[in-house]
Image (cartoon, rainbow, N blue to C red):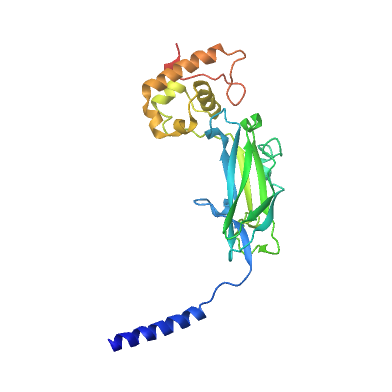
Length: 264
């Protein structure tokens, strides 16, 4: 028993000594945008927002950007700003992409943010607006962090583009809005006979007229509803025939129509 007590005493002595010598971080604190998972590093600061995959009657949507703390939490609130900055439109996209306008493409938002006391993160919320212009061109909005005496830029990954221009991708977020609605994986074979060749405008028109939830539309199971899809094709063809002026495809010249199995 005496030997056990001695061992425990020695262990407690060394543990207390280790606790006293344990180093804690005493440096500065910083902020950065939370990492985006499963995204190409070169575009890791870019957030695509596909309005096309959201039901057509929804005209505004709120997004939340998480901002993380590096360093120790504090016993008081720490404020900083997030500002809209100049968006860089690639030269090859200048005819397809425009810079977002406050009040048109997004609502004014609170620029002053805060890491609350005893917290290690906060969120910036921005309300995006859906406009008819997104049918033909995308909108780009860039927001950037501002450092303060208390919250500095201590960390960010860096990338280089094809022109060897370097940028710190965790200090800004580039939001790109469009009406992208990709071709569902079930639209092929017999579905082409029902709906004809795929076009994004045709898919959006079908979803809007038939009030089809777009998340459901994009699911693989939706393509198994053969009888319903046949009904949709025939209904849409009758609807298209009744439109005055007629509905054209994205080129403005080709008359929109369903596939041969939907003709009557």
